Length: 87
Image (cartoon, rainbow, N blue to C red; front, side):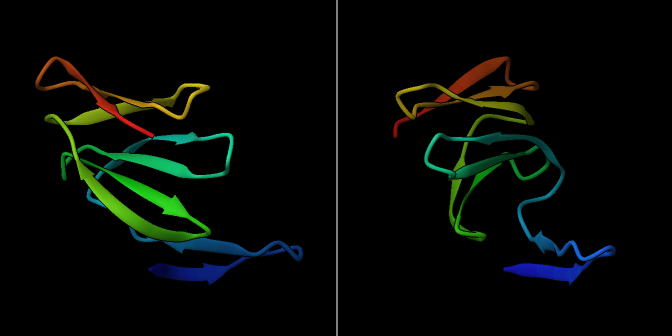
């Protein structure tokens, strides 16, 4: 959900509440946004400004990337693993 709005100079700023400790953000070619949440050990999937899914991954995810085929890769720093999320 939206955490708040504001802005200056005619630009709107919207906050979207995700998991705890967001560290990495990646945007897929279709506009879907993925956020790695370090302390929640999950990834938030955002479509149209709304969190549509929360995906559990390894421990302390920091980085997230989306491949051209839509596969999402998440680097988990504490578990020394990479989670692979199918499109």
